[in-house]
Image 1 (cartoon, rainbow, N blue to C red):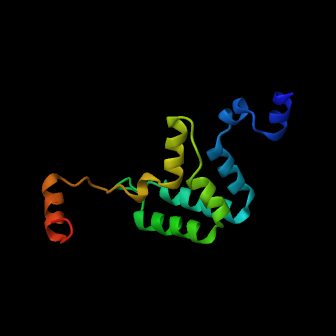
Image 2 (spheres, rainbow, N blue to C red):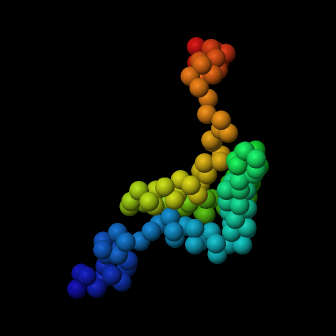
Image 3 (cartoon, one colour):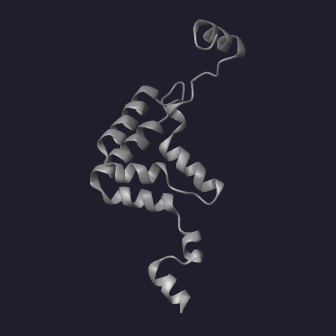
Length: 126
């Protein structure tokens, strides 16, 4: 009796453990034309590699991400940002979807002397 009742309400632990909340959030976004358009836009821009450096345009990526979060209702963005994952693969997909590497990686990795100089120039870091 309890099993039938919990299955009818969706509270069955075996069912809820297999659901992918991040995939559900992406599907919900795709059902909304505005969310789908803006999400496709930032994914396209942030995953584009531009020769000769073979890196994306960080400024354009940031602009596309800002437009997504400014113009899409919170009911969609919140679900995408805070979806729960059960495994590492899901968590990595969520991170790449919401925080594409283009948005934070530098074209060139700074060396320790560069970092030291930046820190010395910043009054909070000193």
